[in-house]
Image 1 (cartoon, rainbow, N blue to C red):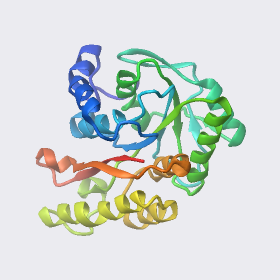
Image 2 (image 1 turned 90 degrees about the vertical axis):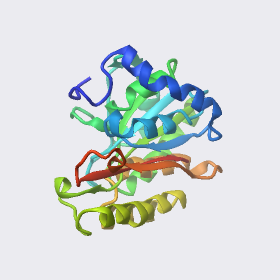
Image 3 (image 1 turned 180 degrees about the horizontal axis):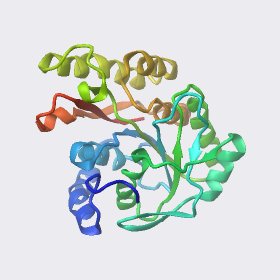
Image 4 (image 1 turned 90 degrees about the horizontal axis):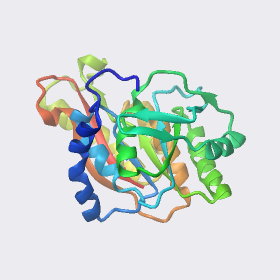
Length: 270
């Protein structure tokens, strides 16, 4: 655990208090059984409800959960945590080193030794909803090669007859002075542009399962900080015949923080 205080509750009671309402919601969710989802990765105060909605929609029979983070440039290789386990406030979560080994046999992969929020912030949720599952910690680059890495994960799981599901960790448009991105100025019109045009174009590309269009929208529109995980999830789900669905969308501006800078979030089932 390396993130500063405030990203997620630091004790078991706080995590259980936050996530308990989603247990019943998961039972009532018509999307239960997803093999791959896209989840935001900001602090739980901002997007925890959307992240919980996405993660709780995954197949409850999953044996291993691969959380794919991002924040990598297009020329980077995949990064992976090679430790035996990770620690969360809920205890230790074992890493599926056998599955990770099969993935590494198919792709050159380097160790993830960097401090980054895209995987860590989701791990307590993963462990809460899937207490018996193992973990694969990965980060994928913003390159079309990540679509192929997702296919490799699918192949590795098939080789081991492992029930694997995927969480792609990605926020959408980072808008405002704080992020150096203000093509539509500030205020309500800028917020509506992000919601209805910039983020919507990326979401539509994801729902169309079009990896090339996803990368194009990400690069040209600056509509996600982590295209790699999205591409990986699309590659993994490439053989599935389920319909991609937007579960919920929101922004940090929905919380009325008083800031003119904000971030878009989407929970998507693949």
